[in-house]
Length: 281
Image (cartoon, rainbow, N blue to C red; front, side, top):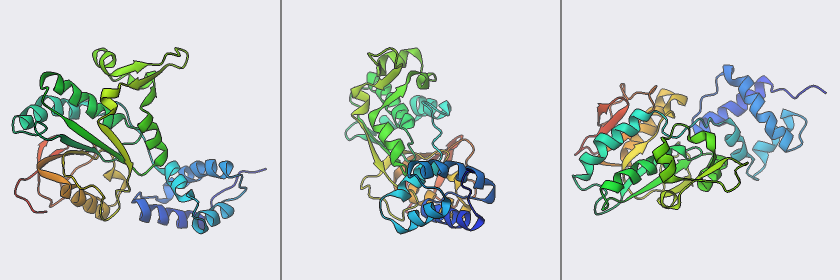
């Protein structure tokens, strides 16, 4: 029996919905990718055709839209990915800003805006824990958000195949990771002192307003805006700006830029931007 295929009309309907709902562009070149990923949902639901699936997506309220978003979003991440950002945080930003009081009386607040399975948020936590070793008065909290419920479940457990911590130095592995008692499973887990300061929540970055009440000292939103058109990029960057304290820092991915933006940021390092103090944007 031949595999189900996605018609032009079905692709157009689904791609328009995905772009409108989560901002991810789905040009025709991504049709094969979308079809392949959605076949997983057809199999999970024991459906024979995309006609049946599309009808199900748009007529039911049983959470299938969430499952569809889970399978089409890209979740590439690693511990200490783009390590220059963590070097800048450790060597420049934290010493300088802690001397100005950030994180000393009230917690230093960081937001991993597209946290995926949690590696970025926990890399931030490890960096902050290292800083706290020499600055015991320093405290922090980290929020990790993602639109995919599936990856957030992984992040909350903080359990990973041992191979995933390859980018982490041996010193940091010993300090902050626990090995599974079942050696055959070859798993590691973040220590409780790292996990306790990290909270994960589902969030669609395309929402007009976010539910967070606090402003953040640092926002990591890396390798996200490349998936959006110019209008959505500008809107997202403006919202992120609104959630930074004056003088706060925004980290973008190394293939991303704020060059064409009129927002009140100054570049302080490659793809690291500081919100100008006194700005009202």
